[in-house]
Length: 315
Image (cartoon, rainbow, N blue to C red; front, side, top):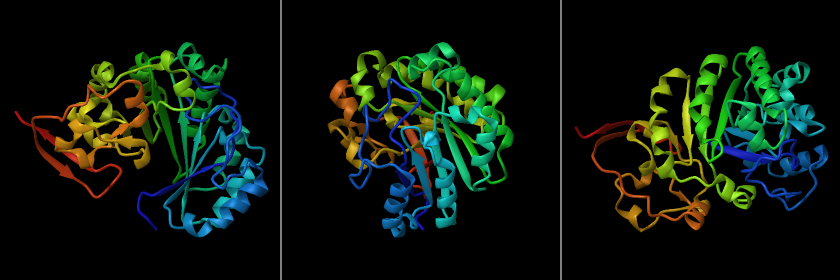
């Protein structure tokens, strides 16, 4: 089994939110075998065909659309638990169905090694619902968090994902405060810089955000590192954030979606960096990316996705 490896499985191509920065296209889309069929039977058949490959992964990550609104979601979880007993089962959700306590209990009863990451896009209905374009989604998602954290079992993990765009940036620190004060059993928080593709590309003018304009806000994230069990950053080139945040920065984008521009070739930490998303270069450009200076020491660790353990600046 490959350490820290994961297979993403889209199990439903529909959603009960309409998020402005969604990386999925509008309408139906093809599964990995070219099919548009997301019935339970079709999913099981697809997974069985690739079962040997999935067995090599450390975890299976269920996405959508919104996976929890699949009409046979619970059945699918039971099948995966039985067929892949050694893999962790992860779910990326908007959290709205966990508003219902009975549904939450059924999901958490399927597997003790379950992980659920729930997306929250603001600290209030005004921000969150504006982004999801679904009135009442903030209240349901917040209640979903509370149900998950109250009912989670030993071995299960609950995470919060916050996607940063121009519309949500001012709520970043507010969301960290909300989580700190209200979601004390949370296992991780993941801050994600948006990917400019699909719906995010279509709504780009509303969402447009540069790394440079976010730098001050990101510097204020540092004091929160010790406030949570785990805090992660996704999709951040190292030169766009303070070195204090490098140890919580993850390389999460596929190699075919990122690139390194000319100025990156002289960067002393290029091999530790996620790179620059191609969509960002296409729509914003690369002038702001400069090799970092004044780094005297970096302690590395054996994790290709989270390779930095410690950074020391020159005094």
